[in-house]
Length: 202
Image (cartoon, rainbow, N blue to C red; front, side):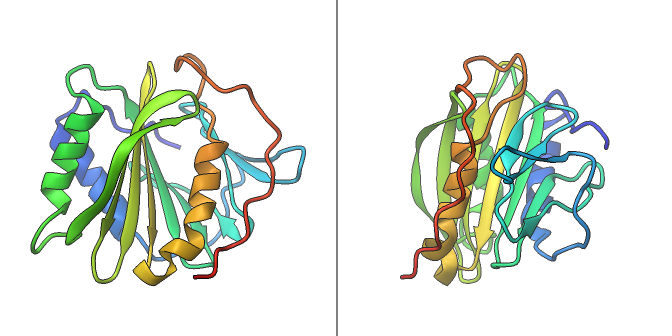
């Protein structure tokens, strides 16, 4: 796999990569064998070979081989996609700055989402982050940006608006067991990964 792009490059290029992640909703076949391993509870884990972070893969989902400079993708047969982008932590822009620029590209009339429905600080894997949710006619997305000492991570959960409530718990489960790579700063104590919660039926 190729190394992710760097935040040292123009921020517009980073935003373009994120935008590419948002439009790549079609499933591609074959799970990635090189970076997947079984945890003690037979939960499949993805461990990034470049950055060292890890996260669980929900049952019924797979991680297709990545094509540079594309993000890691988790495709679920239940109808949602999670993308994960990682790059060198920015020394010149806060997470709030990055989110503001991301929203300038994607939020508003004639853009990807019609409006923002939620936003808050968040802690994921012991690292500070920012969490925002957006909606349009066809897609509801939750965007989580996490900053480590070495790496900025962006996780995006995308699903049809009428399935968001039912399936959002699986994304929350991924965030719960997300583990930063070495040298990223404060980390959680590694815990046995439990099975994801059952889907919530509205």
